[in-house]
Length: 68
Image 1 (spheres, rainbow, N blue to C red):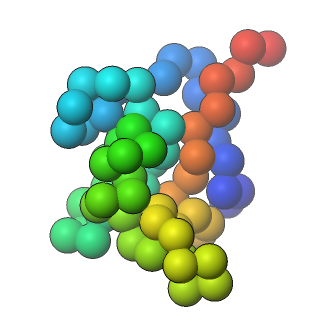
Image 2: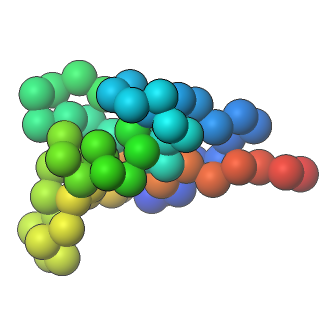
């Protein structure tokens, strides 16, 4: 699994209805699609960078639109 997931359509943020940029595991446990603001608020912090959301296997992916 990569830190990036290619999608054919950008989903909606679970909190604010904006376009989601991440598919992440939240600090509460469930996974969801979030914009960058809410991913930083609800995502786990990466111990190496100190920045949320943490990405990678078991943590989450940044969403990229696949135009091909």
